Length: 385
Ligand code: PLP
Image (tube, rainbow, N blue to C red; front, side):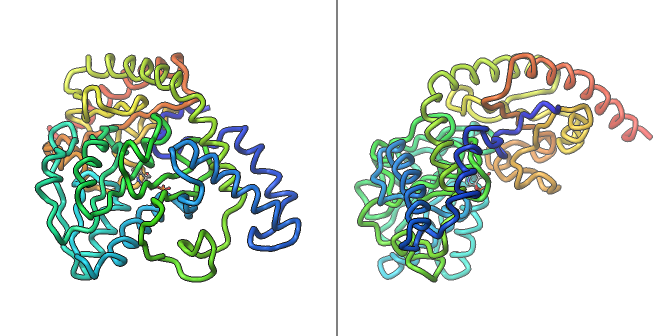
């Protein structure tokens, strides 16, 4: 079995989640919009998951809209608010380190004559709340800031930003897709109007997401059809997936405090040893980072080559984010943090999860110590040939 250290890409389905989903795939196959018993069973499953997720983030069940992914939740929040509020203004504020689901959504709006301010971040990947304050104009309708970065794990000062946006008519959207697995969310403490979530980052199934939409928020749907999800997201719900999302969220929330300490220890072990290697440096914030994230840049190596070599030896990690790996462009996150493009090419992200053990971390480190010198040597040989 490979050692899986890529939980930020997908944290594999927990066995209890699968167990909870199976009856909805085998027996309760009704449509939640149907009035008969099978439909009611399906509806009940969806509503229970809605209650669990709402309860876990200090929201009301009616404020949760299920979507087909975290990406869809981001698209719905950004486009749904931008278009709903467009009679008042067409200005959106976001940051340079957001996930592509956010950056490409605002880029699309830019092509429809919205103005977008993309705020810079510091070397640790953090945005300055005062820069958010400076960017707000009377035409700003939306501020979109992630709670934690998917590549380097840096946690943003969301509550401080919420405090700033509160005194302005703009809505605050928080992409909490990565954050949700590792720390409790309180949408009221953040003063957020919209929060994106995704099931597969916390041991739920892939292809299910949710958007918290604060009661009273005017948001236009982006999928048109039936009246599901209080007319905010048309389409028959992914019942088994949503049930799995609810159970995965409940398990993650219950285990969170202990699990964060355990993951932090594993990360410290990885980090201490990796940073002892010549030419390896940490990316992201020293302390304000997700408990399970260790991301580094390594001189004299191509991140993609290292990932492939580790994979051959049974260790699964990634370069930057799963979505940008495979691309030859260095990560937009690392570039925004001021890391030189040459160095950014050597980035690696190691993210542990519920099943990760200290023994696995040690084996992964051993593998790293044999693979890295080999890769560096062959690169030098090519360079000098
Ligand atoms: N936002 C962040 C911060 C992410 O890390 C991801 C996934 O990597 C997404 C959004 C998209 O979520 P999904 O994979 O459910 O579409």
